Length: 211
Image 1: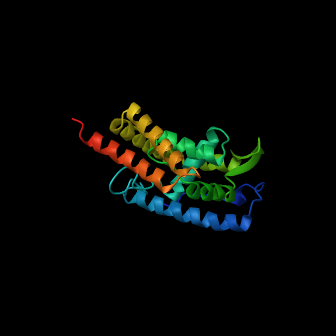
Image 2 (image 1 turned 90 degrees about the horizontal axis):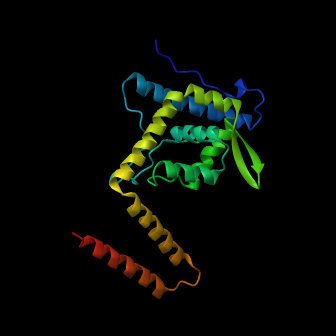
Image 3 (image 1 turned 90 degrees about the vertical axis):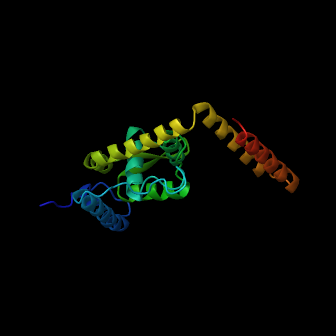
């Protein structure tokens, strides 16, 4: 008979004292997520949550909340990281096709701390996340899932590179930063904003006419 794989709880690691009541609640939440994944596996159902969504590769979040937590945990295991570093690393590993927002990243880090999978240390004025014994045990338990998550990110990177040559992609990034910087300056008036829109529209029209 198939059952649900056991869960590392905060009680499994008595040295963990962070928010035990909240940690108990999150343990139940994670157990429910794992039961859902286990049910899908046993019934031959796909386990890819999130997805690119309709209309393009940036149309949706490619990872569900549980998978995002495991991805973050695996990156912290590689080396201690701070939140912005994690955001940048995920963007890099997907070739820029997905960049988690702070609204996704920091709640996920909060849950990881509540589950005692990581601890925070202050280094050079920054809060850096370090994996714990409980976090290492969770990575071992979910090794197959984490491997699939990284394979999914590699697929996103490969699709991006096939669709956008590196030089074009780099030019797009430079243009985006130039436009956003120009539009955010405090002294920007309506006339300047209109000029930026005109330049972009002209560039779009010219590209559309290329053979």
